[in-house]
Image 1 (spheres, rainbow, N blue to C red):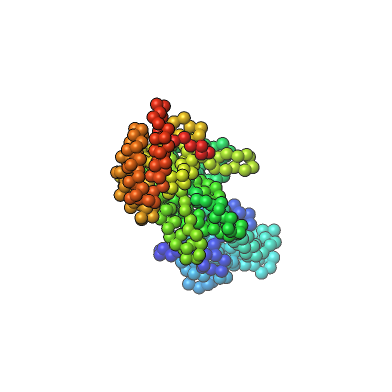
Image 2 (image 1 turned 90 degrees about the vertical axis):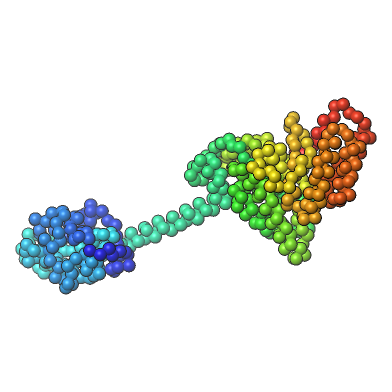
Length: 453
């Protein structure tokens, strides 16, 4: 037999799904057969007309199809689904009249009743009027088909809605967040779910955003923020990170993989900003400057809030430090600063243009933090200036921490002459002048104390 695919397009009714129990209860005269024309089950009343009928018998052992003509196998029945069938019992002259309906892909239902004209013929075949349904079997079948189609369409619509909602939830609770919590779906997340992970945290914000926003209406502000964030978000996701939250113009992103991915995302953000600013300038707007801070460390990732309002977040000192490092970029005139933890965790530190920048102690922290600047994302002239004075800057930096302030001052001055755009060398020149004026200090450790929140 050929492997013809039997779908809903064939026949006038398509396919239905009804159990044998339902069929026997609804239709006392029916036959269900498979592709080999073997009888799978039949109506109880039909068994009285054909006592020798057994499950698994061939259709042709007990029945002969008279109309339509030329019907002899499953394929020919399938091609004539919905037609009026007259089938004669082999053991008697009794005839059955009905229709063939595709029950499942490989099962056909013959929905029928004895062809009788009066009460005498009913009695002649050993039945009574009570054996015949008082309802219209075909009408009932059509009703069932319509009800089933409606149910299927409702289920499909509900499934589409659930898929849409699931996609929408992913915008609010990233799938990466759920994965880290080992949750399959947002519905599995409960208040207080948490996990401890070592991750890299990236903070970025727009320089002088308050001043910039003062010149815009609330709607313009809203459009500006969305336009800017739409440029930055893809740079984070393509490097394996995900955004934990937006804080106004600020972005907080997490990277569960190598810290290099966070650094690459930051550099991609800075490069995307160049194209974004070119568009702003063509439209007559001022360019935007951003600062990015990165730190790597242990954190708690989970849900906080109340029973009616949850929020995904990360909490730890290392998260706070990443935020503070981001804030420090303005003081140093840097676009990208990373902590010592991140620098030492890089797989390929030599792949970046990097210099040690300072040792700082932020408020609330006892241990100092060494800051490194990665300047690959700077404007070409600024980058070239920092690269050309890199060795000179490193020598001056070492002299400064040995309290050889006059020699350090000379070298920092040379850096300023060669690279007047470097804000850090000007900062160290001022520090050297202050230390020379203050004289030698026995308790000086070179650590910059910052009051950043």
